[in-house]
Amino acid sequence: MQRAKRIPGQPGTVAEAVLELCFRWGARRIYGVAGDAILPFLAALRQFPDIQYIGARHEAAAAMMASAESKLTGRFGVCTATSGPGIANLLNGLADAAADRVPVLAITGQVPTAKIGTGGKQDLEQQQLMAPIAVYSATLFHPEAAAEMLLRAIVTAIERKGVSHVAIPKDLWHAPWSGAVKSPLGVLVRARQRELEQLATAVQWLQSAARPMMLIGEGARGATAEIIQLSERLSAGVIETLGGKGVVPYDHPYHAGGIGEGGTMEGSRLLAEADCILVIGANWYPQGYTPRSARQRPLRLIQIDAQAAHIELHPVATCGLVGDAKEVLALLLKRMEQGEGAPNRNRWVQRLQEAKRQIVEEQDRERQLTGHPVPPQRVLAALDEMLDEDAIVTVDTGDHTVWFNRLFRAKRQEILYSGKWRTMGYALPAAISAKLANPERQVVALVGDGSFAMTGMELGTAVAHQLPIVVVILNNRLLGKEYSMMLAQGVQPFGVSLTNPDFAALARAFGAEGIRVEREDALSPALSAALHGHRHVPVVLDVICGAPVPPLAKYQAVIPT
Image 1 (cartoon, one colour):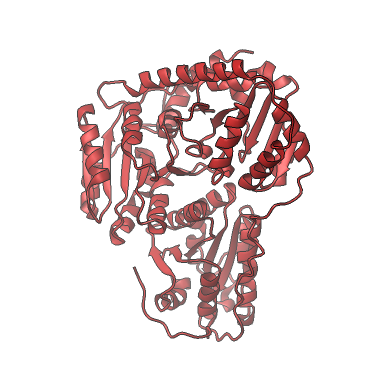
Image 2: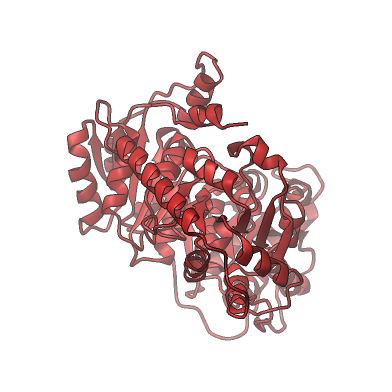
């Protein structure tokens, strides 16, 4: 933790104005990597006790940390990097925030104003670099514009749910600044009810449906009580995307598992049989996982989304409700109290119960697999049996993501992952920011060996800040997702083998704890020790796993036409 006491009062330099504005708008941490063009900014940050600086090992990881904090807390995340290669390295993490529509502010250094555009060292047109990612990007050229420019960047990021970027030349950080720093008025808070044009249609469709289903995604978080109440009122089955995992507990009788690469055949069949589908906070619809005949027939599909564009672009939506999921669902429930009676859904309830039974039986068989090396299915079973109900799980991108989506039985755990961008290396940086924001909660990162190789050096960051996170590595010495896809496509796997170190020994070299698990009977004791030990350093579980092909290809092959 790099802090020192500062002199209270109005900021006197551009750097101090930037920090004061970030703080007033809710920033409590800035993630970054030191570099020449931001050294004056870091000097000011050292004197600013209200914002903690987290020094990462790579700029991409710093941006991933900022993105994950925004996903978890709802506040805008902040990251910083130097000019040239610094901002270039930020892009992968910023793209994750842009793709998943969360507000992140990137503050980068720039070469001195007299050197901009001269082709000198690390001189780069940063706005062009940021153009595909940022909703706002600007370079500061006069000190008096600093607060207004940064305010515009923050407000735009929050309002448009995206990445804002401000570049500040090295010679302007120390420039004198005078003026007032604006505090938020609260008008950007979205928790307000509004008139919804298609509300009456949605209520009528849902109440008259004989076989209703609900598909929930990332945007449904925070609306658990309303979703369960509506599901039970309508006898509606609930299917989740990966982003919606944990919103409705797995043990709810109408929970019908996941959909997509880690989904089940029964889930696909239920969507095909439904006569009305309510999509909540998911802008992806699993067309490839439902029968073609179901996709071609007229379908009453209602979508709730905070972004009107998501509804307009939905391939099969026929009714759209724009707004916060919790807010809109509360309005639907209130309107249904005044509506007509529902049809008899006893047969549909029996169908949901039978589907649930088949899903549980099929998953139980997979979760109980034995063998050497350790089956990844067993790791997921052990993990959900031992995790705290309010744990935060950060999931990386790879074969393990599919197994997690398919077999992890979420209760109330919060799941963080790289949704649309799907970058490898996300889980460890995300776990670091999750633990910083929620020090009292259990935080577990689930990664593949390929993903850990990309950002594993951030283990040093976790050690430096004494963060007792648990990192579970599913180590199959492969880029498993690509290996599985090649096999499914009839291609001889090539270029996917990995040569790995002993990750447990590497963890110990960092000052963390490292445990290597090579046998199935050692898995549960090792995981229990990692999760429930009292320590102030990270624990890395290096689990030597097999590489079974996920059931995706089998299910797609038998989906009826």
